[in-house]
Length: 454
Image (cartoon, rainbow, N blue to C red; front, side, top):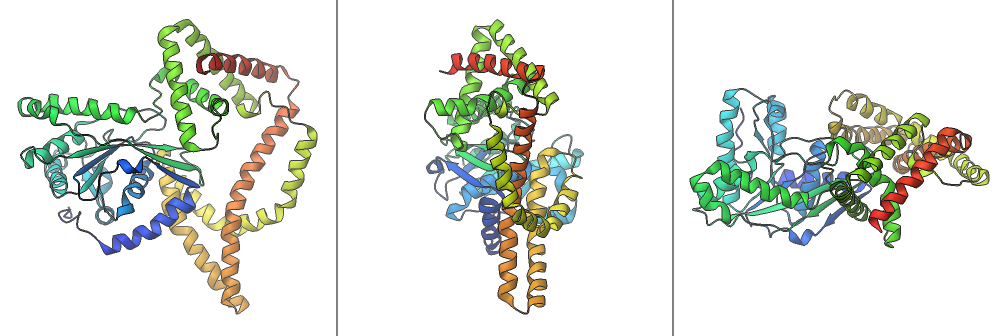
C-alpha cells in the first residue's frame, strides 16, 4: 500500500488543479452554487473536523472542497477503503488528499487493522491545525434522509484531543449539502455551514467508557447536521412526503412572498413542510393516514397518465401552446447546431456513466468523464479541425465558443420540449376520468397542506 504520511503537505500542483476544477464545478456543471453562513468556517490554522450528510458520491466531497478552499486551505478527506484497492486509484486519491478507512464489508482483517494507523494520521493532521473532512454516515444513499453516524468520526475526534492532553480545542464543523437535482447537468447546489462546536463535556466519559463517549458525540453531531437537513425520517411514507415537498414548496414560498426558484428558499420550504407533516402524524394520526393515502393515489395516477403535478389544475390555452411551439421552431436550428456539435462527448459520457450500477455515483462520473474529460478533448479536436480547414485560428475559436454556448441551449431546449409534451398531453386528456381524479386529489391534498402551513 502506498504511503499517506505526507498527504497534508501543501501542493502547488493541487492549487493549479483546483483553479480548473473550480471553474468546471462552480460555473459549468452546476448552474448556481450557494454557500450559506460561510462566516461560520473557523480561520485557517484552526484544528477543524468537518462533518456532513452524504448523498451524492464524490460530488459531496467536491461541494465541501469548494466551500472550504477560498482561503487556500487544502483539506484532507476520509473515504471508504474499497476504492483504494488498485495502486493507480490509490495514487490519484492521495493526490486529491483522500485517506482510506476500511469498513467491515470493505476488506479483510488486515485492512481493518490499518484503520488504527489512519486514525492516528488523521489525528496528527488535526493536531497541526489542519482541516479534516469525514462523512459520518460512512456511505451515501438516494434520498433526503439521514443514516446513523458511525464511530470512526468520533474515534478520530477523541484521538486528536488525547494526543494533545485534551487541550487541542478541536472545532467540529457541521455542514448540510443539498441539491435541486442529484443527476441533472446545470442543476443547483447549496452548502449550509453550521456553527462549529467542541465536545469537552464528553472527555471524562471517554476516559472511563470510550464507546459511550463515541455514541454521545455521534448523537450531538448528528443532531447538528439534522437541524439543517430536509430529513424525511418516516421511511414508510418517504415517497409521499417527498412528493408533498415538491407540490407545496412553490405555493408556500409565494404565500410568504419569497422567490420560489431560489434553492435556499426551496430547502427551507421543504423542511417546513416535513415538520408540518411530522406534527400531523403525531397529533392527528387519522388525518395523517388520509393525507398519505390521497398522496399515494395521486402519485400512482400521475405515473399512469405520464403527467407531472405542476400541470394539474393549470389552465393552458391552445393559443399559448401554439405560441410555445412557434418559438421552439424558431430556435430549432440553434438547438440542432448545439446538439450535433456536442453529440460525441454527450454519447461517450452517457455510455460510460450508464455502466455504473450505483445511481448516486452517476453525477460523479458525468462530471469526471464529461465536464473534465470528453468535452475539453472534443473542443480541442474541433478547434484544431476547424482552424486547419478554415486556415484561421479565430474561426476555430469562434466555432468552439458557439458549440459550447449552444450546448447549454440544447440542454434547456430538451427540457422545454419535455415540458411542452406534458402540456399537450394534459390538454389531450383533460376530459378523461383520470384527469378529473387528479384534479380532485390535487385540490384535496393542497387544501389539507394549506391548513397545516398557513
